[in-house]
Amino acid sequence: MTTNDDDWDCEVDVLVLGSGAGGLGAAAVAATEGLRVLVLEKTEFVGGTTAYSAGTCWIPDNRFQRADGVTDDAEAARSYLDALVGDRSPRRMRETYVRRGTEVIDYLDGIGVRFWPSKKVVDYHPELPGAGMGGRALEPVPFDGRRLGRANFGRVRGPVPEFALFGGTLMLRRAEVNELLRIYEGSLRSVPLALRLGLRWAIDRLRFSRGTRLAMGNALVANLYCHLLARGGDVWFTAVTTELLSDHGRVEGALVTHRGRQLRVRARRGVVLAGGGFAASAERRAQYLPAPTAQFTRAAEAATGDTLALGQSVGGALGPPHDDNAFWFPSSIGRRRDGSTAVFPHIWDRAKPGLVAVNDAGRRFTDEAVSYHRFTRAMYESHKAVPSIPAWLVVDSRTLTKYGLGLVRPHLPALLRKKYQATGYLVTAPTVRELATTIGVDPQGLEQTIIDNNSYARTGVDEQFGKGENPFDRQYGDPEHRPNPNLGPIEVPPYYAIAVVPTPLGTALGLRIDPDARVLTESGAPTEGLYACGNDADSVMAAEYPGAGCQVGSALTFGYVAARHAAQRS
Ligand SMILES: Cc1cc2nc3c(=O)[nH]c(=O)nc-3n(C[C@H](O)[C@H](O)[C@H](O)COP(=O)(O)OP(=O)(O)OC[C@H]3O[C@@H](n4cnc5c(N)ncnc54)[C@H](O)[C@@H]3O)c2cc1C
Image 1 (cartoon, rainbow, N blue to C red):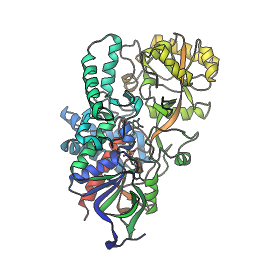
Image 2: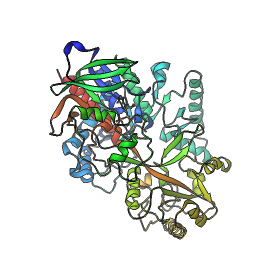
Image 3: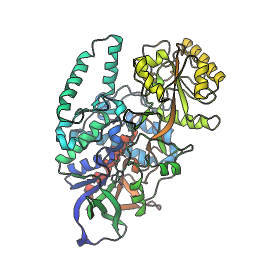
């Protein structure tokens, strides 16, 4: 459809589709630059998958490193990304990420959207040159949701219930979780923290549907949303964009259905696609992701790829296929009390001592403590030879009690564990052999695996996969556990197993963009007036996962780049 200047129902400078890190980041920056901004959100909530996330941003050469006197991190990160990604994505895009990512954090800091450094978070490929051993991952500073007022606060998508307390109503930072768990070790140091958080939560609940002290991705989203509103930006909820309107190849606006009306919305400086990719589309997962196709995802429900289709409808091209087109978690699938499905990402628990992951042969197929992305890829790789999807995480009762596993929290009384057993989420048996038979893996194989594991636990050396030999593994192990923080015996009955399956946490295949975040056509020409960021943009990492936060980091970076570019357009 072509456009006619007199024919618009409303006009803004920048129209943003989607309100995750990419969309709200672009919107907040554009509003700060003095532009009129309208965000169209398909659902009733802002935040998308970003609201579910830890909100971690992978930003090399950031302000905190520089303050600590680290001056060579940009160069190190370039070498790291070259080694990891190579020529599978354009180098100039990675260069943009490294160069402008750090600029974004400074800019956001200037408008009150702040981060803290996670100084100990190690990159996901510590074996490669230039890998960061801490300092690149940034965590959003908690945000006081009361600043939004009750109505707008109610518009912020809630967190993953399993990553918060009291049914998802009390959010904690990861450091706080660790601190509170010390109570089980008899430490009273965390009692004041527990009281402070509990009291604030109880007061909040008198007025709000959940605690207003937001952490992680929720804090980031709420802060950006608050800033956007303060700068006069607007969000239309349950808004459906049916068409992008262009004139001679230049995107001018969109046809939008909102509150039962169809409206032609003009975007003078540009339209930003930030719909979060397609992890939640069963159809697109079958089309683009490896077999066996993932049946579940922890991504937000509206990440179905409509915005990619809108981009393609005006000539935008998808990137070249990457290895598996996604970023992965191994997740266990449980059922909540209300009957809904809980997709639980196993991010940290695999690294604890006293756990093995096995395939149908009852054998291990990887170092269990590697990143979730590497672990899931190892599942697919192993599956080529031996059925490994689902794979089974196997522990004994000591490990389960001390560290928990998946939905089963640490120190959960045996009686309460029973509900997980009743639904089949947690499988248990008095012997390793019986456990193997119950979960359908080779009993001899599993027995041998446990014998091997227990011998490695004694020596501290994993002769098969070298678990615990690198700083990445060790960071999520148990530092108190000797001689290897990731290797512990599995010997105290009863034994337990939980099935894990591959689940995309985000997708890597998206619309090709240039260093200004402009969507490119098949011929490589930029589409004037059309930008993409977040998972709607083709991953600059080509489906590799360098370190914690590279998706939120990339979404913010290219959202920022798009907004700054749009602000300079006439
Ligand atoms: C549990 C979990 C933890 C994670 N932790 C991290 C982490 O710490 N760091 C990290 O980097 N990554 C993390 N990820 C991945 C990361 O959260 C996502 O990849 C990233 O947030 C995607 O951002 P986005 O802006 O592209 O999309 P989203 O945050 O998903 O936002 C997209 C928005 O667009 C809306 N939308 C969709 N289609 C339309 C449409 N047609 N019109 C209007 N609106 C539309 C959606 O409803 C949604 O609100 C995590 C993922 C999960 C599931």
